[in-house]
Length: 372
Image (cartoon, rainbow, N blue to C red):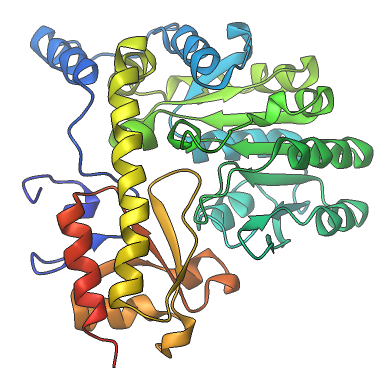
């Protein structure tokens, strides 16, 4: 793994086990390797064409995996999900408008909103006892007070929550009632486990299709973050017109290798690889629960519905608001800093379980050695 040159394996010295940034350690899907190898052999490294096939590939993938019907004419590509979010936000809010986020949430949300000219308004997820849900009353209050949009994480990072269809439909009705927009980051959707049901926001209801935008990519599920290709998806005519009006340069930012890899990833030939990945992650998400119980008593962890990111509460250990600092320094394990996800992350860490079980076992063993 240390032959790789990406952030996960190069940020820290060799004695550090890296379980922080959202990269996985698995080989690429064979179809992706074959397509990129062919492109390099051909010297096919020029500009991305107007239609590299990503739209049609994703439409077919979404139908197979989610039962979603998408009009390919209402799909545009761009560089990455956060870039798509920023460009859509710029188009639907005015400078100074407030945009709701639902912490604890992916740290770049706090940066992309101001990049688009907005102001972050925090409406934390509501703990349910065995998970989390959207605080619909809090979101409605924010919209009633003038917030113009919400940046939704579906499935949610870092908790791994797959939002229920009813909750998404209720959110859409609230947004429609107040003239607000919903931008749904759905990058973790392909990683929803079979025992959960992912509902694309645009499918939640007619209102969702009217006021919503979805932004997604193959990059998380297929480990393609360095290859730069994301999709902006709409259903309603008004939302489609917003995306269609974005400057051509937004689409020109799509990477050619990213587009090639995405087409291969979304192809039916890669479905068995994705199913195998989900089975591996299912084993790891359950293994982490066993390891924490054995080695880190006091840790609180709910097995996620989707993704390869585990949200672990270490508050009971007395390691401060940011326990990942102690763990990095003393256990030589790099985890994502909980407070970066918002103040709701104090006392928490995010653990990347997209690794070999042996790596996960060693990491938790090292952390457990710190427990007095």
